[in-house]
Image (cartoon, rainbow, N blue to C red; front, side, top):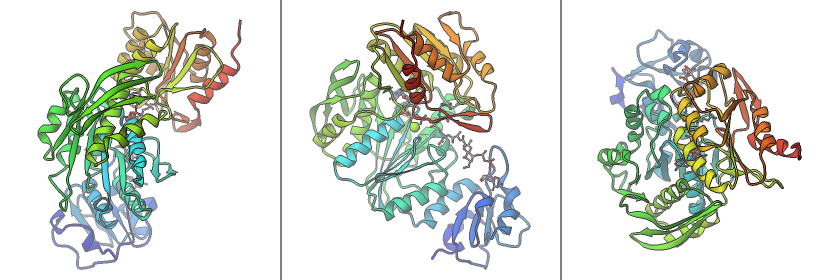
Length: 489
Ligand SMILES: CC(=O)N[C@H]1[C@@H](OP(=O)(O)OP(=O)(O)OC[C@H]2O[C@@H](n3ccc(=O)[nH]c3=O)[C@H](O)[C@@H]2O)O[C@H](CO)[C@@H](O)[C@@H]1O[C@H](C)C(=O)N[C@@H](C)C(=O)N[C@H](CCC(=O)O)C(=O)O
Ligand SMILES: Nc1ncnc2c1ncn2[C@@H]1O[C@H](COP(=O)(O)OP(=O)(O)OP(=O)(O)O)[C@@H](O)[C@H]1O
Ligand SMILES: N[C@H](CCC[C@H](N)C(=O)O)C(=O)O
Ligand SMILES: [Mg+2]
């Protein structure tokens, strides 16, 4: 039984705690979801201010409200400095600190989080660890999959997920930690054991404004790690080849393990050989070295494998288990995923939606293709506009033909997004086909034996968001249909 007084450390509450101390049945940030005995946190959002909904929350049965300033309500109002961060701490207390009872591994970085988290999941499973996973594609508890809205959901949601995981005997949870989540305090109250950094390149500047602020947000995962929590060891896993790691190491109180290819690192890939369909290398660690073959192409895949391997080593897993598990992974859905076909050209669906990821996959695609490379790509609406011209420039530079199209235009006009992409482009090897289905058809219709069609930006997504509507749309299925209907001369 948790009471209102148990929910918040008194030091966080401005003024005396109310004399009432009701039992709490649930905690909420959405007034529409409040039930009798629930506590409502007023969050100042980007669209509306949760304080405006406090009365509705009380009407729905809230027994207390947590706010930034006093509100004239019939239930106790506890005033705190930061409702969002306080909510995260309260959520952990409400669910009785589930992350203190399990291993929690957080992965942050611009690209590679989802891939690395799946690689690490495979390694932990190989070691008979019961796993949970929270990320872009879904939340997974052992083998069961649940849909979640954000890559890193709100604190009230994640703490409940952790408790559910614990109830289902999960030993280790792997969580993608987005920069938004760090900045908005969604992961306050999480007791991380190992935290991993993939890389830092341009994205989300609509939200963070500058690369410095973006890096600062990412650094919170490392600076909040702490030295120990009830005696448990903590480790930060950093990419030695990314200069942001120097900053993260400075702000991190816990020991650091580095991985890398080009710069000196604790865990290194040496004797690298890359083929169009995979990579192999020697993984060199302070605990020995072994040969590793990956069925995932590109230098970026080696980085993801090294990040997962280093996190696994810091979790106490043997190098031989790591190598055996990584060798068995076929790939991650929507990440450099080959569309099955009888055709003599390759069609690949990938989630590259940043300049750096697009460059990486196109470089890999170029090496695979004997003939021409076609790239079908767009940029998301209501998202960082600065990446649009950069992505278009990379597409035309590294492809023979680019087809610029829509990718979740959301509230924006798809044609204006494409204008932002093509503005200033002097190259002429591109076409604009706003309708994504038609764009995919065009590329596949023109592909010849030896060519490669890269369909980038949506990966595993099964929808297209236009204004407020979410339409079913899956690049892989669209590609299959286009291949089936292709006219052969
Ligand atoms: C910028 C951002 O993160 N926005 C998140 C935020 O939305 P918001 O600020 O617009 O919320 P709001 O609508 O103004 O509402 C404010 C408060 O009033 C409450 N409210 C509202 C209406 C009502 O009737 N009653 C009520 O109580 C809301 O529940 C909320 O607590 O709070 C919502 C509720 O939790 C989130 O779903 C939403 O994420 C949106 C969907 C989003 O797109 N977020 C992106 C930017 C994001 O977080 N992305 C990252 C990274 C992705 C990546 O890796 O690339 C992620 O982790 O997903
Ligand atoms: N280590 C890496 N470095 C650069 N690019 C990568 C790396 N790993 C994957 N990519 C590219 O980035 C895309 C997205 O990869 P992934 O989904 O693993 O990243 P993410 O960090 O989870 O992205 P998001 O923030 O959108 O969830 C891939 O489809 C691939 O094109
Ligand atoms: N997690 C990222 C994914 C972008 C994927 C792309 N398809 C888009 O919609 O912009 C975001 O929400 O910014
Ligand atoms: Mg992800």
